[in-house]
Image (cartoon, rainbow, N blue to C red; front, top):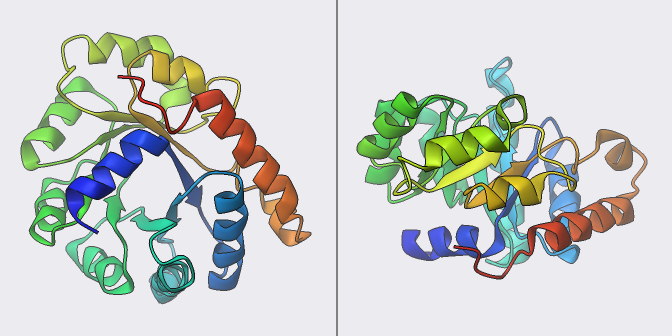
Length: 222
């Protein structure tokens, strides 16, 4: 899928589910449950504490690509190096998400014709990421900053598409979107470990439906 199509999908669907610390087969089952609930963007994260497990992230991305053939778009998360960009791209990732604004990783991601979503907290970091070529800037950790913070930095930086990430719940996602966020990344509040452990994927589908309902995903808000 072309970069512009991935960017448009994110803007339309608004919610990226963050899948962290699961086996590849669990990631695939999660992707299925999320898809049933209306979420078709899934970020599978690298575990930076254990490089020996990087291949599992790639395996999960590959499985999702094969199973859903574009209906669910996987991306890679917690990407800190160009080498991890390569691993993700080879597996079929459509976008690269990082917790930081590493300009080398941003530029390399764009060279590889992938969508770049680095993380930033300050206006300075957001502008540097944008200048390096970022397609979106992830404001993280957004729950600690609040929707008023997003609104405040969007006022002078309205030309930068921002995603709200970190503690986004069904109760507050609308606040962040109304404050100017183009979308949100949602992790443990959606992809709940106890539900996966107990194979209660229907509950994850119900949570996904609630997030989609609150976000008004699929409609244009900007």
